[in-house]
Length: 155
Image (cartoon, rainbow, N blue to C red; front, side):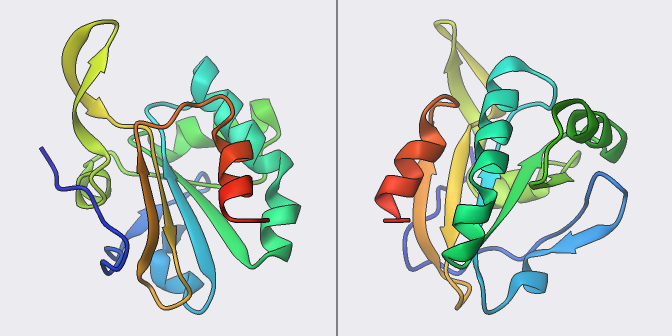
């Protein structure tokens, strides 16, 4: 099981393909705060709700200095379908190797319908402009998470 990040940790660097197959790196956002959220799969109900909530609040977050990147194990083609179908404006990147998911502590054992399984742990990591973790939230709920995050960040 991967180690969970703590506030003050240096956020692991990553470069992953977006829905168009273009590389997106955490380093591209140096000097800005970044909300990196991890979700199990594109085009599923909970993940759609979460992505739509981030998209609906993207302008508010951007005005407060935050960029948003959603990470799943999906391939760019599936991310593109997800983006088009749901009219998403949030940046979606794919991590089929799960290396970034593991580096952020967002992949490992979790409970699913009472069973212990290995998979993506719905998580959100807020990275400061200095590249350090400001908040690391694990096992978050898809519904209501963005509203709670906005309140916690005082946006």
